[in-house]
Amino acid sequence: MTLQTPQPPPSALRAVLAALDSETALRQPAAAALRHPTGPLLPAHPLAVHVLEGPRAELSAARRTGWRFLIKDGTEVAAAAEVVQGAEGHTFSHFTAGPYLDSTLRALREAWQLAQSARSRCQPRLLTFPGQYATALWLHSPDGGPGADLLIPLAPAPMGVTAHRAHPAAELLPLLARTPVARAAAAPRPLLLGAPDSAPLASGAL
Image 1 (cartoon, rainbow, N blue to C red):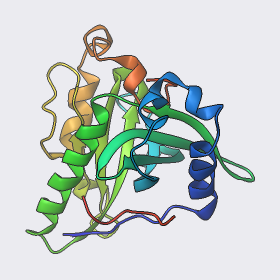
Image 2: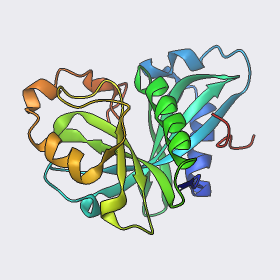
Image 3: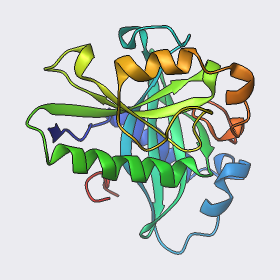
Image 4: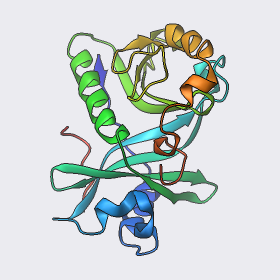
Protein backbone atom coordinates (compact mmCIF):
# COMPACT_ATOMS: atom_id res chain seq x y z
CA MET A 1 0.00 0.00 0.00
CA THR A 2 1.41 3.35 -1.04
CA LEU A 3 0.47 6.21 1.25
CA GLN A 4 -0.23 9.25 -0.89
CA THR A 5 0.48 12.43 1.05
CA PRO A 6 -2.37 14.86 0.40
CA GLN A 7 -1.67 18.29 -1.02
CA PRO A 8 -3.96 20.97 0.44
CA PRO A 9 -5.31 23.81 -1.69
CA PRO A 10 -3.16 26.97 -1.52
CA SER A 11 -6.05 28.87 0.09
CA ALA A 12 -6.08 26.38 2.99
CA LEU A 13 -2.40 26.87 3.70
CA ARG A 14 -2.72 30.65 3.41
CA ALA A 15 -5.58 30.62 5.94
CA VAL A 16 -3.47 28.73 8.48
CA LEU A 17 -0.43 30.95 8.02
CA ALA A 18 -2.62 34.03 8.45
CA ALA A 19 -4.06 32.62 11.69
CA LEU A 20 -0.55 31.98 13.04
CA ASP A 21 0.17 35.65 12.43
CA SER A 22 -3.08 36.87 13.99
CA GLU A 23 -3.15 38.05 17.60
CA THR A 24 -6.90 37.50 17.67
CA ALA A 25 -6.67 33.88 16.55
CA LEU A 26 -3.85 33.16 18.98
CA ARG A 27 -6.02 34.30 21.89
CA GLN A 28 -8.05 31.09 21.60
CA PRO A 29 -7.47 28.86 24.66
CA ALA A 30 -6.28 25.95 22.49
CA ALA A 31 -3.56 28.21 21.04
CA ALA A 32 -1.84 28.81 24.38
CA ALA A 33 1.21 26.74 23.38
CA LEU A 34 1.62 28.85 20.22
CA ARG A 35 1.94 32.23 21.92
CA HIS A 36 5.55 31.80 23.04
CA PRO A 37 7.16 29.45 20.51
CA THR A 38 10.78 28.41 20.71
CA GLY A 39 11.13 28.64 16.93
CA PRO A 40 9.11 29.19 13.77
CA LEU A 41 5.62 27.71 13.74
CA LEU A 42 5.09 25.49 10.71
CA PRO A 43 1.91 23.80 9.44
CA ALA A 44 2.54 20.08 8.93
CA HIS A 45 0.73 16.86 8.01
CA PRO A 46 -2.33 18.35 6.29
CA LEU A 47 -5.37 16.09 6.23
CA ALA A 48 -8.70 16.70 4.57
CA VAL A 49 -11.49 16.63 7.15
CA HIS A 50 -14.66 14.68 6.37
CA VAL A 51 -17.79 14.48 8.52
CA LEU A 52 -20.11 11.49 8.60
CA GLU A 53 -23.47 12.36 10.09
CA GLY A 54 -25.29 9.34 11.42
CA PRO A 55 -23.41 6.19 12.44
CA ARG A 56 -25.24 4.02 9.90
CA ALA A 57 -24.25 6.19 6.92
CA GLU A 58 -22.00 4.93 4.16
CA LEU A 59 -18.51 6.32 3.71
CA SER A 60 -19.69 7.71 0.39
CA ALA A 61 -21.97 10.02 2.37
CA ALA A 62 -19.06 11.66 4.23
CA ARG A 63 -18.75 15.31 3.26
CA ARG A 64 -15.52 17.26 3.18
CA THR A 65 -15.63 20.30 5.43
CA GLY A 66 -12.05 21.57 5.23
CA TRP A 67 -8.50 20.74 6.25
CA ARG A 68 -6.63 20.18 9.47
CA PHE A 69 -2.93 20.95 9.97
CA LEU A 70 -0.71 20.01 12.87
CA ILE A 71 1.30 23.04 13.99
CA LYS A 72 4.93 22.26 14.81
CA ASP A 73 7.12 24.33 17.08
CA GLY A 74 10.51 22.97 16.15
CA THR A 75 10.17 19.19 16.28
CA GLU A 76 7.19 19.20 18.65
CA VAL A 77 3.51 19.42 17.72
CA ALA A 78 2.03 22.26 19.76
CA ALA A 79 -1.53 22.47 18.42
CA ALA A 80 -3.69 21.83 15.38
CA ALA A 81 -5.41 24.34 13.13
CA GLU A 82 -8.58 23.71 11.16
CA VAL A 83 -9.81 25.61 8.14
CA VAL A 84 -13.25 25.33 6.55
CA GLN A 85 -14.08 25.31 2.90
CA GLY A 86 -16.27 28.02 1.39
CA ALA A 87 -17.34 29.22 -2.01
CA GLU A 88 -14.31 31.52 -2.29
CA GLY A 89 -11.68 29.27 -0.78
CA HIS A 90 -10.78 28.39 2.80
CA THR A 91 -11.02 30.38 6.01
CA PHE A 92 -9.53 29.70 9.43
CA SER A 93 -11.94 28.08 11.89
CA HIS A 94 -10.15 27.27 15.15
CA PHE A 95 -7.15 25.77 16.93
CA THR A 96 -7.35 22.51 18.87
CA ALA A 97 -5.15 20.92 21.52
CA GLY A 98 -5.10 17.80 23.64
CA PRO A 99 -4.51 14.06 23.15
CA TYR A 100 -5.70 14.01 19.53
CA LEU A 101 -2.45 15.71 18.50
CA ASP A 102 -0.21 12.82 19.54
CA SER A 103 -2.88 10.33 18.52
CA THR A 104 -2.94 11.72 14.98
CA LEU A 105 0.83 11.40 14.69
CA ARG A 106 0.70 7.85 16.00
CA ALA A 107 -2.04 6.90 13.53
CA LEU A 108 -0.01 8.36 10.66
CA ARG A 109 3.00 6.29 11.71
CA GLU A 110 0.79 3.20 11.82
CA ALA A 111 -0.50 4.03 8.34
CA TRP A 112 3.08 4.28 7.03
CA GLN A 113 3.85 0.88 8.54
CA LEU A 114 0.81 -0.62 6.83
CA ALA A 115 1.95 0.93 3.58
CA GLN A 116 5.12 -1.15 3.66
CA SER A 117 3.26 -4.47 3.50
CA ALA A 118 0.72 -3.89 0.71
CA ARG A 119 0.84 -2.85 -2.93
CA SER A 120 -2.37 -0.83 -3.21
CA ARG A 121 -2.39 2.95 -2.73
CA CYS A 122 -4.38 4.85 -0.14
CA GLN A 123 -5.08 8.46 0.74
CA PRO A 124 -5.06 9.47 4.44
CA ARG A 125 -7.96 11.64 5.58
CA LEU A 126 -9.61 12.52 8.88
CA LEU A 127 -13.14 11.27 9.47
CA THR A 128 -15.26 12.59 12.32
CA PHE A 129 -18.46 11.13 13.73
CA PRO A 130 -20.23 13.97 15.59
CA GLY A 131 -22.95 11.70 16.98
CA GLN A 132 -20.41 9.35 18.54
CA TYR A 133 -17.80 11.97 19.48
CA ALA A 134 -15.23 9.93 17.57
CA THR A 135 -12.48 10.70 15.07
CA ALA A 136 -10.50 8.29 12.90
CA LEU A 137 -7.72 8.35 10.36
CA TRP A 138 -9.44 7.24 7.16
CA LEU A 139 -7.22 5.34 4.72
CA HIS A 140 -9.19 5.72 1.51
CA SER A 141 -8.41 3.29 -1.29
CA PRO A 142 -9.18 4.95 -4.65
CA ASP A 143 -8.48 1.68 -6.51
CA GLY A 144 -10.07 -0.93 -4.26
CA GLY A 145 -13.48 0.66 -3.73
CA PRO A 146 -15.26 1.39 -0.40
CA GLY A 147 -14.76 -2.18 0.82
CA ALA A 148 -10.99 -1.69 0.87
CA ASP A 149 -11.02 1.43 3.05
CA LEU A 150 -9.55 1.22 6.55
CA LEU A 151 -10.23 3.32 9.65
CA ILE A 152 -7.78 3.85 12.52
CA PRO A 153 -9.72 5.32 15.48
CA LEU A 154 -7.90 8.03 17.40
CA ALA A 155 -7.61 7.97 21.17
CA PRO A 156 -9.67 8.61 23.17
CA ALA A 157 -12.13 6.36 21.34
CA PRO A 158 -15.73 5.55 22.33
CA MET A 159 -16.27 2.62 24.66
CA GLY A 160 -16.11 -0.66 22.78
CA VAL A 161 -13.89 0.73 20.00
CA THR A 162 -10.18 -0.13 19.97
CA ALA A 163 -8.09 2.92 19.20
CA HIS A 164 -4.98 2.67 17.03
CA ARG A 165 -5.99 -0.55 15.34
CA ALA A 166 -6.77 -0.58 11.64
CA HIS A 167 -10.38 -1.65 11.16
CA PRO A 168 -12.07 -2.35 7.82
CA ALA A 169 -14.58 0.47 7.48
CA ALA A 170 -17.34 -2.06 6.88
CA GLU A 171 -16.67 -3.53 10.34
CA LEU A 172 -16.13 -0.33 12.33
CA LEU A 173 -19.19 1.59 11.11
CA PRO A 174 -21.69 -1.01 12.47
CA LEU A 175 -19.74 -1.10 15.74
CA LEU A 176 -20.11 2.67 16.08
CA ALA A 177 -23.80 2.30 15.32
CA ARG A 178 -24.14 0.09 18.39
CA THR A 179 -22.13 2.45 20.61
CA PRO A 180 -24.52 4.33 22.94
CA VAL A 181 -24.15 8.08 22.52
CA ALA A 182 -24.18 8.53 26.28
CA ARG A 183 -21.06 6.39 26.59
CA ALA A 184 -19.33 8.00 23.65
CA ALA A 185 -20.04 11.41 25.14
CA ALA A 186 -17.66 10.56 27.97
CA ALA A 187 -14.82 11.45 25.60
CA PRO A 188 -13.58 15.05 25.93
CA ARG A 189 -15.86 16.74 23.42
CA PRO A 190 -13.94 20.04 23.04
CA LEU A 191 -10.96 18.18 21.62
CA LEU A 192 -12.84 16.98 18.56
CA LEU A 193 -12.40 18.42 15.13
CA GLY A 194 -15.11 20.91 14.36
CA ALA A 195 -15.46 22.04 17.97
CA PRO A 196 -13.74 25.32 18.89
CA ASP A 197 -11.23 25.25 21.69
CA SER A 198 -11.49 21.60 21.93
CA ALA A 199 7.68 28.92 5.14
CA PRO A 200 7.14 25.58 3.52
CA LEU A 201 4.63 22.90 4.26
CA ALA A 202 6.21 20.08 6.26
CA SER A 203 4.13 17.06 5.35
CA GLY A 204 6.63 14.27 4.88
CA ALA A 205 8.57 13.29 7.96
CA LEU A 206 6.69 12.09 11.00
